[in-house]
Length: 256
Image (cartoon, rainbow, N blue to C red; front, side, top):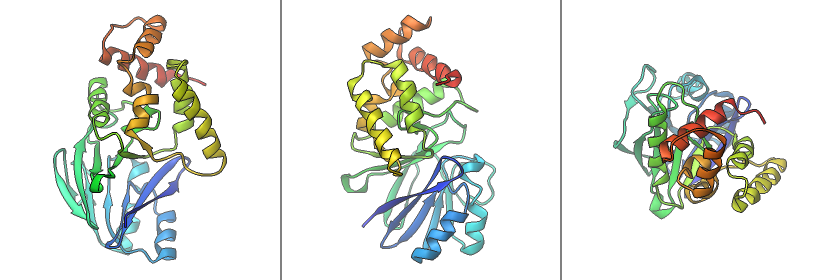
C-alpha cells in the first residue's frame, strides 16, 4: 500500500514522505529536523531522496539525512554534489516499488524536473515549484515560454492525477485567481472549501489535474471569460501564451 504524508518545513514548505511496504522516500527535504523526528518515531527505512530543483528550501536537509543513512538521491543535472542519480526529462527509474517518469519542467529554475508515477491508474505528480494549487511558480531563471510550456505539459497528464507541490500557497493563489476569473462558480466554491480545510489545520493538498483545469488561471488561458477579463484590464494579444504571460506578470506584483 502506498501512502503520502506531508511534513511541514519553514513557513509554508511541504516535504513529501512516500511510503510502501518496501520502504520510504522523501521529496524535496528543505530541512531535516521534522523528517528525522518522523523517521525515528515511525522507525522508517529511508531508501531514497527525490529533488525537483536546486533551491535551498528544497535541498538543505539532504546532508543531514545522508549523514544518518546513505541512500540514492535522484535529482536534476545541476551542481548539487549529493545528487548521485542525475535524471532528466524522459528518464525512468523505480524505487520502493514505484515506477517514476521524470518530466523536464523548466521555468521556475532551469534545472526543474517533476516526478510522475502512474501508480496502477491512481497517478501521482510531485512537481516542486512548477505547478501549485490555483497557481504556478515564479519565473526566476527560465523564460515565460518555458514556464508556459511546462504548465501546459503537466495539464495534459491524466485528469485524476494527484498533485503534490512544494508550498502551501493555495488560499492566496485562489484569492488572485478570483481577480482573474471572478464569475467562476467552481472557483468560488473551492475558495470557501480551502478556507475551511486550512482553518481545521489540514493541508489543502493534494489537488488534481481535473480540479486545476477548472480553477487555475494559468491552466485556463484559452477560457473565453479569462481571456476577456485579461484583455479588458491589460493590453495583450489574443493568444494563450500572451494571456499566460500577462497573468504571471500581474501575479508577480499582486498585493491582496
